[in-house]
Image (cartoon, rainbow, N blue to C red; front, side):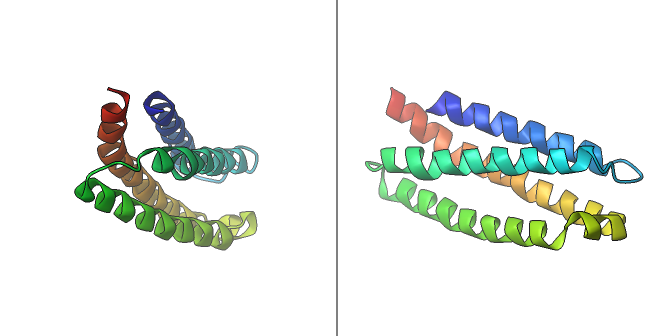
Length: 134
């Protein structure tokens, strides 16, 4: 499970980097940008599904402190899902074309949030999964 989660985190980091490369362009690439966005959404969805459906249920015998950290992670996950949905709904391709600079700023912020989220998941879940595997 740990190796799978690490691979999903790496995949999501790579997708975010690809999206950041797209938003670094002076004008939107109307072919490349939607593909980069889709990669982020798909990688994030696979990561979330694995954590929610496989990892969390398998970590039922953890300390109270670890259970609290996992609960906080779940709550933060819900908040991030809402933010992500709002970002996607707000930034349709027409909106992006109309306000490229605004989209670039909003996407840079979402990328920072998502990368921080990966760091948080890694800090909490990797040690738990390592102990579980030992």
